[in-house]
Length: 440
Image (spheres, helix red, strand yellow):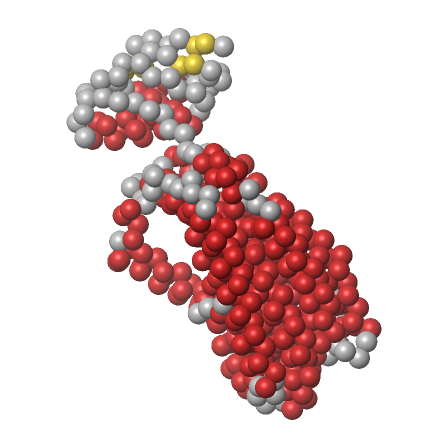
């Protein structure tokens, strides 16, 4: 929750300056989320699956390899996001956003996120949490990128499609004036705070708990975890509904003193009462889906419900009726309600024994095994050569043996038997190559 409070806190101060500043900040945050955070968070859904299921297994050091792989991939994926941020102002002006709003939207809360990242990394090193899951940098981080992306891309769509359609309200509301955009900004952040209290927490806990059960090959625990999480979140939505209903004109005053904006937000919060109920169920159900590794199914369900039902209805009500901002959220409620029903049905029909088998295959990391005294080793492909080099270096450092003698390379591509590849083995692993037999 603290992580997601960076945006609402910024808007609290901007709202005291005026509705133009509030609108500009809201648009900036919407763009930051749509073009950056939603993509990264979506891609990280693959890590949620891999991390929890790997940690539930017997070899915790495999988790360190998963972390290394995810860090490299996400760093590469950030470059397109940065490119969008650089050119965003002329794009907004071309879409007929107010000039002052477009100018302000170029600003972001980068410093807050940088400090957050630095603090988390420092805590990990100081507390030494990594000792159980990290031994060193592994070349295996370059393996199985395809498997990672098979979960990451659907995961990005699963969370991103929902996130993008919600943030589209901020972009489109600007066409109805600064007051509507300011009201949409406040409502969007109120809903975000609600989501980040219990739904996000229960969703993350469900992902971790279910993933660990599956990684440990326990088929009984996941079902009970899923049912308890769904029951608990349904209870918390009732509490949120009472707070939103009776404080609907007091909550907007946290963000702004503009009476017109406060009135519009107060009238629109009834739609958020209904939306937060179905959104909370979807939030927990999405966590269960990620823990299982069913991101592909989740992406399809989200795409159909939000882009064929929720989004079109909401945008039409926003632009074509007097409901304005409230109409947008009523439309999203319809789409999210359908999505929550489908998710619950899918979860009740999951074959947990089959999911345990898939988790074992998904988290398996293949190594080149060599033991002290071994005189022959089979190396398949390019990356296993580097695996062997690293393993051999580790063995030499422990003084377990003086040297290996590699005599066989099987199922190899032309590069593996090339003199350059053999030179790599000899130089970096200090291994004498006496003979090479290449088998087709």
